[in-house]
Length: 297
Length: 297
Image (cartoon, rainbow over all chains, first blue to last red; front, side, top):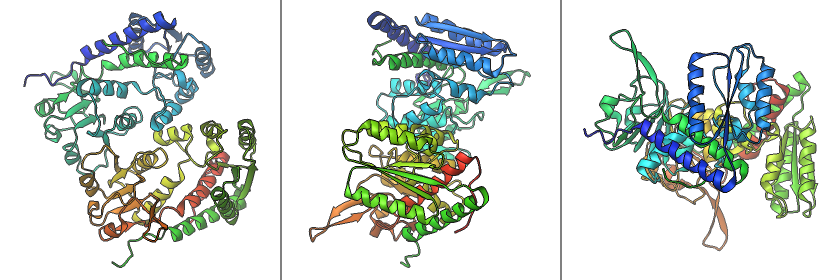
């Protein structure tokens, strides 16, 4: 095992951010367009605060405008919707992200539906879901977009490859399947009801594991040389009573078969914020009616 | 060959219409709700006129309100949009169908996008596409809905079956894949770039052929006992200089392997209008906030 087949997600995310920064520099220089991302945080959840802070930091580092809107944990539904409406109307804001979870008194789906689909950088709005399926220009969910960037980066053209997506969630499995299909892969969507999942996975040139079950995909399910993208993040107990993170793939068993594999942690995870920034650039370009600048990292 | 495996689409469509009529009778009796379908025809295209007449006749036979709105071939974009707006606002109309093709001066996609998604009985609107993918209540395209009705009718629960959808169009392949996925099938979407399509089809418990290529799917691609749904309608020349219709499947070669197969003509085709009527009932029930009446044919 040389380890050459193991993706360094942290390094790849840094590459993506460098590309985003180069795009932003060109948008500012050539079009006077500075992409802006607004993050809405309701309440004092400590994990959310860390996450929002990291997003703001990386947004600024890429040369973009970063707005943080904080509301008390006691905020009403109307107050949160009023913030979304104001951001929808702000021409300097191209992406809006409402940090989840929201307090119990707030109807999450009503808030997310209120976001202008053209500013929906999470890509979960029904209109973006529809646009993605139809093949219209769309904002796509961050994690699937990141996985596609990685696959294109390492494998180039994906045309004709057989991709097996294990898991059919709205935030990963289904949009991932659509993106792979548009990249001309043959796509199989498998799930808990699938018969002979090992045999199905063994046919795959690309396996996407997104089921949320620790070490579910076994090493001998992987065809020699296949690309394995592990989207799972599962916390399991260690012998010392602490916990550790593992993915949906039995990494130690699969790494000897895969031509390419993402570890957990340090694989897909670090790419998510980078793709949020990439989505903000996409949204800004779509709003301005200009193509995204092509840059190299 | 007993022929028991050959679906009579005309008879099945009649069953669906009978079910729709029974649903309409119950909606009228129990809720005072009479579903209404409006068809908009622009110009004098003879084929469209025949099709619109058939729709109106079947709509009335099922006990529903049928409106036909005819505009001159010289109608402007604004005139067509004004008709759509008026129908969107009419509480007695639950389904709107704009007959295609439209004259050259009319922007088709602008007209279709203008239809209220809740009245979009064709199921092609971006919002319905998104709802379908997410798994929200949606109006689904007629042909895929008809294929699902047929499969459920003959096979019952589809859970765990491997369905191979050959073709990835927005009007058949992709919505079909989503419906099969929601029915707990393992779903593979294949297309022109797929490698070893014969081998892939041979794994399928259900083959959906929707590529638009005459007799493309060969008999020896079909696993013994598999269900074969042929959505293709292709006109090919006969020896006498006339033409005939064939599907995307080599029917004569496949019928000996399939456990269930739809012929062309007389298979999926006749079901389309029946499913349009079923969609109008669905739209009326969704608008009224009541569940669809469960009836037997």
